[in-house]
Image 1 (cartoon, rainbow, N blue to C red):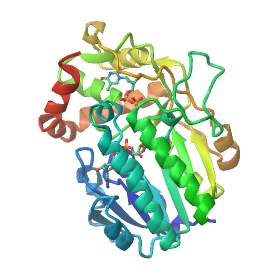
Image 2 (image 1 turned 180 degrees about the vertical axis):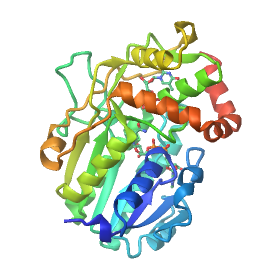
Image 3 (image 1 turned 90 degrees about the vertical axis):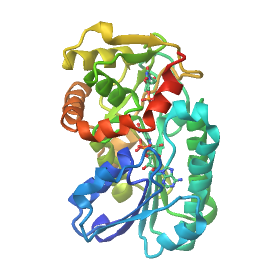
Length: 343
Ligand code: NAD
Ligand code: TYD
């Protein structure tokens, strides 16, 4: 059994969206935990997310790349548990520049796994995505589970599938005690405004339109980020080594267009703020997760429904304009032009 309250935990990618939410969650829930955050601080990493724990003696930060084997080996010393978030994560960027995704997501994961084996960590927990399973038709009876075959569509999901396979292989070949969670689309505080929900909210706060790919019929399974953090916690502390757990949100079958309309309604904006743009190449139609294994074995249960979560997300971005306005005023603008101007 893993006791996070007495563990030294290496969090990779802890300055990103889910990683920073997890660091804050961990330090709050486990007063005895020690957390080392290893992050390269790419465009997606932001230490502002962790300002509230900066002076906490239980927390330390190392700036570095997970593909740097020497550094990773040094940071791994004395670590009990690794929680591996660090990745390139945006599908649209993976279409622009796949090489970054293979390097960080595949090679970086292998470097971490080697160090974890050498340093005999008690648990290597890998954060993955439902996108590795490919796309489902619009049939509510069909969902992804732990037994679904890996059928990734994008360079992002292919590189995540590669990392999942390596993690499983290190369990079988080297006996590394691993767990994997495959989770659906997260949303909540500190999400970089290139992903649909924060992009929609912040565009509307700037009185700009929301770009919707294709006809907006694609369906995602949405999970509030703190529900995900609790799921990760339970997979580490209650999950069996060697196992994969799928963690989904509380609802499914909500199209992107419906999500955007819900955000418009919360923000008192009309549908003239929707702009249909050219579809994403290889755009997966639908993701949906069957969480029954995690419910049974881990007692996992997502608590925040989409309507409530969207209200909370809008409130967070309204109250934290400085955080996202700084991001949107920098290199983000080059990305936005490259991604949307020609659509
Ligand atoms: P994010 O893009 O917000 O953050 C990624 C973090 O990793 C950043 O802080 C970045 O600086 C860091 N990083 C990137 N390359 C690195 C490298 N080479 N070395 C060290 N650090 C590096 O990502 P996120 O949305 O928080 O996702 C975290 C993890 O969860 C990823 O593994 C992702 O695949 C997975 N996931 C995300 C979602 C989602 O909806 N966001 C859903 C399921 C799974
Ligand atoms: P995204 O947040 O990029 O997550 P993922 O591609 O990993 O699911 O996109 C969520 C959905 O929203 C996806 O179907 C693509 C769509 N989308 C838009 O319609 N417009 C946008 O500007 C973005 C970024 C995404």
